[in-house]
Length: 186
Ligand SMILES: Cc1cc2nc3c(=O)[nH]c(=O)nc-3n(C[C@H](O)[C@H](O)[C@H](O)COP(=O)(O)O)c2cc1C
Image (cartoon, rainbow, N blue to C red; front, top):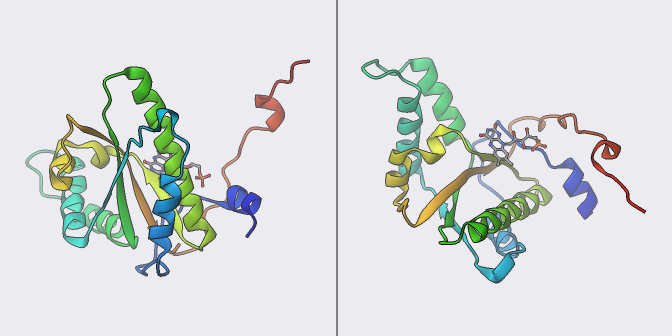
């Protein structure tokens, strides 16, 4: 695939097969992430590749966040959450090393967004789907504990799920026309 096709055809994938990634694909994608542009070369990105036991714990946290205190978790919710969180072959948690200066923090977040996009495009080029998610479970205090991330040192920017799509990736969401967002000045 040429680069323009990769850029235009990439879609967020929501449903995954329980199938591993092609050999080396994750490593190549992470190396692509590290090549992202980064003002001042702060290299603010940190990644955790989350194994099955920790993923089970994250599932419990996700379910508990959606269950009123004192209630037993609904079976349907448990099943849906498990499918969503255990099916994708990989889960990467991406966090940002905190900085003192708010301008640096803002630019570091931008650099991490570039890194995640590099990662996701590298995967897409190899037939692997991914999804950046920022739902409640991604930033819960219990999640920081389960991932052994010290919230005073790092901020979780998102979860990135990756794997083989279970069905055709969703169609492109409607985008604005270029003419709506581009002004040309003489
Ligand atoms: C910062 C960020 C956070 C996102 N969080 C979520 C999320 O929590 N859940 C979700 O389903 N998709 C999430 N997405 C994916 C968007 O919903 C998706 O990119 C958008 O619908 C456009 O679809 P496309 O990626 O297929 O072009 C997130 C994307 C970004 C950039």
